[in-house]
Image (cartoon, rainbow, N blue to C red; front, top):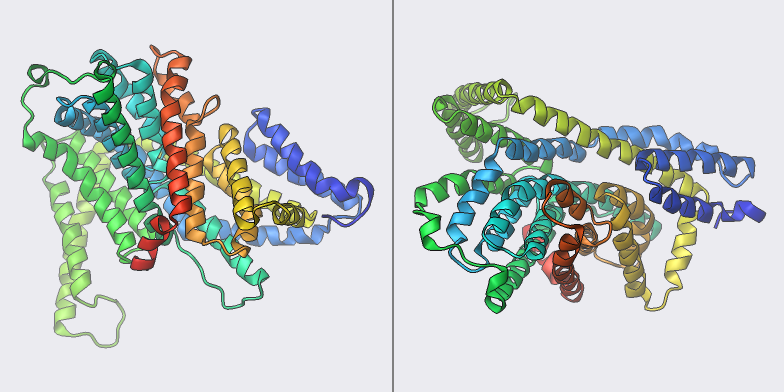
Length: 523
């Protein structure tokens, strides 16, 4: 609690309550966070319970946020996802999967889940995926006689997979925030040689729970289609036309190669998330260039092979520049690498020019800019809020509250999870991650909870709250683009998927190894 008597002693509590009430007003969260911090910091100073000297740390923290190499991955992953969406690569993928699974009962629903997982792994942006699926898959499902609630639930659930399947924007922010909370928890315990966790470890941790969730969705869809065939009829073989392997491969292979190159390089320890994100952004641009002008794209193909050649050279030869003495073979490899870089640069410039000429590049840059600005503005607002809240003794108040809860560590974890779940009705994942975790993270981690397990649980939980009526964001995204669905159809369809999500959270709580085994193996 803050020191002082009268109202001053309760400023931290008032600050938290004000934040919750103002969030319900619908004002932009950035202004609420900053405004609350300034008003309550000023009140605390006047009442003698807040030391303004604490704000001296603000500039340093903001500089740290802006120069954080990990956070540079955010605009790159956002760019990659929006490029795949705007260049219609996602649309082609959905069409191919629909033809592949169409002859099975519930086949369109399964193809939506599979494409949702692939888009999640290549975009990681919930809004983009739900809107893309709503525009493309919903009309096809309703045309084939699918039950409206079932179709709506399938699309919303598949769209939110971007929260948990790496490489997602959520995980990059979560990893950065969780890492600093973990360091704080260790310093508070008197450990000065602190361990850290990386975004790569969190990606590895969420891999198995994410794939398990996709499996649970598909299992539910197959069960429903078998039990009530009229809800999800199969498409007659005559209507599907010939399903050629070459068409399926053409739609499937490029996104899968991109996902493997991005995720594989992170999990294999070859590249940091930021380096892998830049590979993803360049790869998505080259794929878009190929898609937008299929006829004249020899230089883009050459650039793709040049990129593979560069990776192969780097893994065989020591190609560090500026060494005093390097062998003849290393020098020859450097010369070849230089030539390959020129080929790669020509291909990337050509792809950018093609995207620019059809207006795709401008739209992608615009969307990337506004999403990135929103994320970083929220980060800054939350940093200021957390500083003032701590200065007023808010952290001590929450620590006392969590430590007296029945059930010890699990009781505290349950309450924090419930709070995050409820906040998910009103706030975006970025805002929740940035507001809640710096406050409760160090306390929970200080109780001995595994940071990667906690991170995966929070990501799964946030995904559930994205789906839950009445305020789930995914439901609003779908309602915005699906004119022939009633709100009740969407609410009705989503409930089984929310139950599946909660079941998945419970499985990860009971079996922490699902989240911790792969990171231990790889890192």
